[in-house]
Image (cartoon, rainbow over the protein chains, first blue to last red):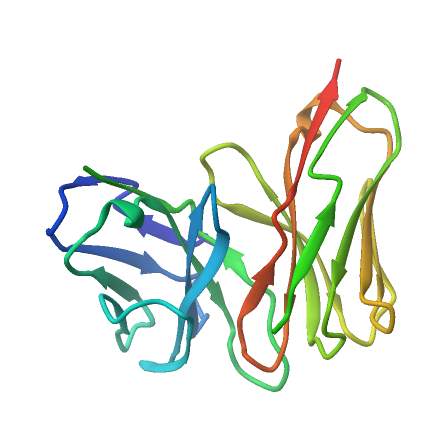
Length: 115
Length: 111
């Protein structure tokens, strides 16, 4: 079974630009979560989508947004990039159904550098 | 607000040693706890998942325990190998349907 895939793997942008990152979950998984990892703040939760609906959102500014498609693939967008947005962006997928919280499987990440 | 702490931040051991990594969390109302491994510049690999009703999980040379009432988990690695060198992250999930991560323990196993 194929794992979580993220594209692109590396991105270099300049301040003020916008960027879109893509995540394809494991087949059959309907939940996709996004995390930002930086040396200073560690891993921080951005948002979670399930069946095309955002179920939860972390404490990030509105410049960070996302969506999920009917095939469970997800995209996240960052507008008006700032230097501090440079980070490894990780996507995680899970079954997402039922009570509790399912095991999360992470992709390889997208390394975003903002110059 | 859930907070997760991992001690030590870094650990260096000779090959073959058994070792224990520690994780503590402030809110015991968790659904489960997951241990991950991260190699430099890479994504996270799930090692073990412990449901809140469980006390421990084992996979090969790895054993993770959970004491929900005291807010603690340990990851035991038996007979460490140089290939075990990585950062180990502990994360808990709660009603907020998100993972809260510790800052990790950077493990180096010396040949």
